Image (tube, rainbow, N blue to C red; front, top):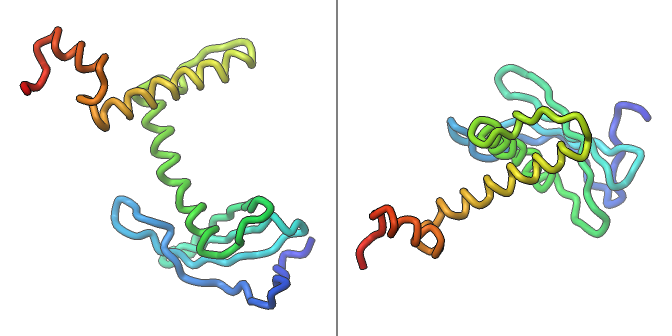
Length: 148
């Protein structure tokens, strides 16, 4: 396959465009994006160039059959990588996601599922703690329950 992209069937050009990859810790993350076709009609190469430094990053994208393919949609999906990485870092720091010493492959998914389930329970409980009877009962026993 050559390094150049092909024009899509609709005739629209896939030229570079400046778009935000979403909110970061310092506001919107603006990059220059280019969208290149591959040999597969469902796979695309998304190239991101930092506006100040010119640093390049590459995203190999898969769009399922029947889904609309737009640059905006691919950029939005690529921008979701940042919060996912933050969530995994939180899982490693607070829940021991990276602290499994296993010898069998089957133990790795078991540990991962257990840690992610614990993280999900804690996230849901933290979002609305007074709506969960078990938490409320624990709080009443400890004298932490809200009056009313």
